Length: 141
Ligand SMILES: [Zn+2]
Image: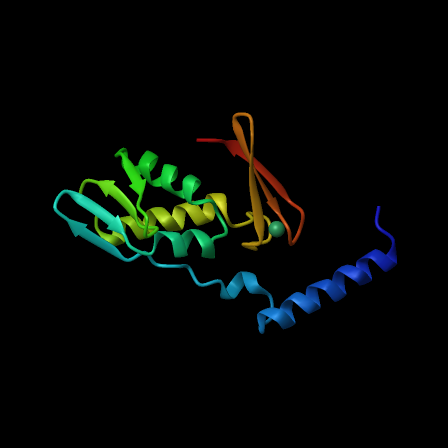
């Protein structure tokens, strides 16, 4: 149980965050990052892979493994922070996968906030929302 003063503190904190972000409630205005994709030879290169991982606040390793799993191809991150995947994939397909990643591994399913933390505990992922405190657990990959 929380007492009244703790609620007030949370209110203040939320207000401070909104001011910092320069907007009201960040969940609705979250702009889904779009990947820029380059197909060279038999490879697909996600040029802004590092930026996308940073925007989503997820580890590059996790995002890389997600794409590899979903597309069922090997991949690696090069020195420039680009993800190179074997095979030819278009930007539409990659962006759809990225959207699914956000829905499942970034966005809180309770309040829609993207201010979440994803941790791996054994064979499961725990998605913890920093906005509403909700926790979702699902199978890790
Ligand atoms: Zn939430």
